Length: 248
Image 1 (cartoon, rainbow, N blue to C red):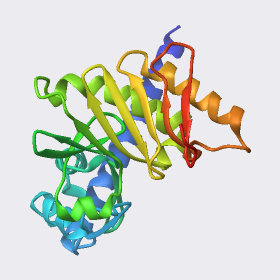
Image 2: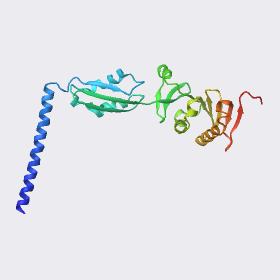
Image 3: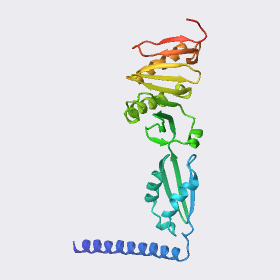
Image 4: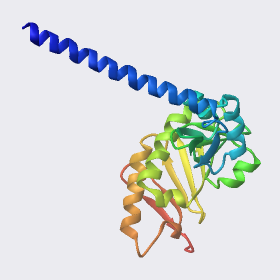
């Protein structure tokens, strides 16, 4: 029993010595590296950004950059960058001896919303993004106008988000040909690039769009949605259409 206890204590002592030795080596390497400036002159590499200017990102980073790569707080940099409009998430990593890697994932607008002369973008997750002449020129997305003066944008946010998440994920062909949407009391009007008007009730929008998608599959290849001047989905279970270039 005494021999076993002695061996156990000896093992613990050996492990402790190994830990102390490794820690001392790491500390010595770090001190030596700092003394010769091995990790100084941080090289910032930015990628993934298309809309956000790299210089703007760099300007946000510089106040958090110390003289050594080892002293940089990566979570602080990530938090700071993710507070910038149009940036959804950021991956920050360091590569020794002196490279700081920044990978940007941007938010992409899917709609330009107009309400009471206020113009703002919205992304697929329902996040509002500022719109100006530059961004409007870069992101050619459908324009959604809320014509009900008594209701704020925020009241429609959830319905708009759910509707366009479905359209983009399940019915991209419809989204790609969509130019304008008008929301009035109880009615949503969709306008295609080919001037086809589609009317839907403000309730059960997804179900009505599923019916439209099935209808489009049924008439294809003899017809496409652009062959109709209007399509009315407001009567449950029915699709009422009027073809273009025909009288009546």
